[in-house]
Amino acid sequence: MNDQGEASGLVTAQRILDQYKTLSNNEKFEFHTAIFEEFAIDEDTLQKSISDWVPGDANSARKIHFAAEPKSQELIRKINRVPGATADLVAMWADLLKSARQSKSFAGLDEDFKHLFSSWFNRGFLEMRLINWSTPAEVLEKIIAYEAVHEINGWDDLRQRVGDPDRRLFAFFHPSMPAEPLIFVQVALTDSIPTSIKSILRPDHEQIDPHEAKTAVFYLISDCQKGLRGISFGKFLIRQVVVELQRQLPGLETFVTLSSIPMLRKWAEDAAQDEDSLMTEEESKIVSDLLNDTRPSTEFAKVLAARYLTKMKRSSGHAFDPVAHFHLGNGASLHAIHPEADLSDQGLQNSWGVLANYLYDGRRIE
Image 1: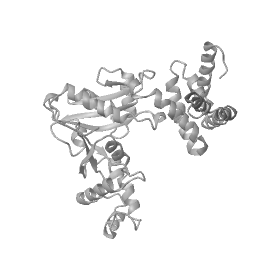
Image 2 (image 1 turned 180 degrees about the vertical axis):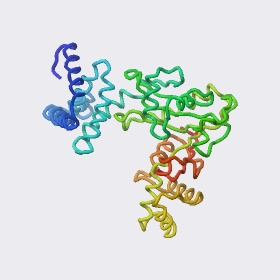
Image 3 (image 1 turned 45 degrees about the vertical axis):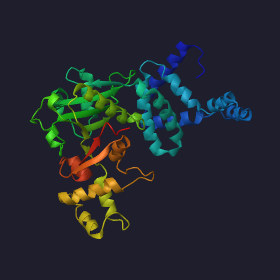
Image 4 (image 1 turned 120 degrees about the vertical axis):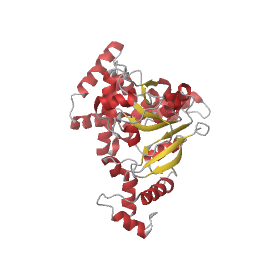
């Protein structure tokens, strides 16, 4: 922190990053503890700034602002001067999140990272790229690795998703991490709104001319960097993809998702045990009988999903389901619910195979 020369400061910062990578999980916990305790707010300087504050004097108010900043933020800034350090700091934040699960005292340090990364990764710095078969293999391998919902089964599967004429994959990148996708969205161009994921993912799907497509389906959005939790990229990516597709393919009329309902089954099983839930006694009994992994009838699954997505709210009044919260918060509307739409193991485990369409109407998004 006190290095006078820029070169010596870079050497010190590089040593920190190099040594940090060698630490065990317990040593990283100790490292985070030391940063939290030793690089806190300078209370003497803050108290003096408060004492010197003059109502109506913007400069004296600014002095309070800067005095109240924890020294940990300046430490992170200084480390970030090293070329390539941003990716290392993202990984460091991911480690910090693990430490935070062991001790709530790290909440302040977590906020320091979030405050800085919100500026460093704002929309103005992000670059949207179309991922295709000519994209460097290093990036394509990471797309395969980061796909967590509809698993990409090797290179042939990836070739279909990025190489077929009626498929698109867009990703956001940051200049300091040019080979690391931050988030990506997979798009299928179709002639109608799909009712199951199988129709999109099957290798022998009937391809159509993109210029004849009427619907763009966002069937998967994947966040790639655990160390950027809380930094929202998805809403910007979807909106920019809509604009880009409209520019390339003016015949597109409908922009819609085919989305998972990740908390549906857990909610239903919990609600079946809760007398004050949104279920009738008969419905609770049906759900309780489903705990052995059998599937409900399509009509019952649809009723449960509709009630869950439209009635279950957070304390803020927003949708309880995280995927619904994301899309509704981005200006979409719940359009349709499809039972037996995802019969993969994960789809059955999360929602008995139910998926939902969220509609993005360009006239209403804002």
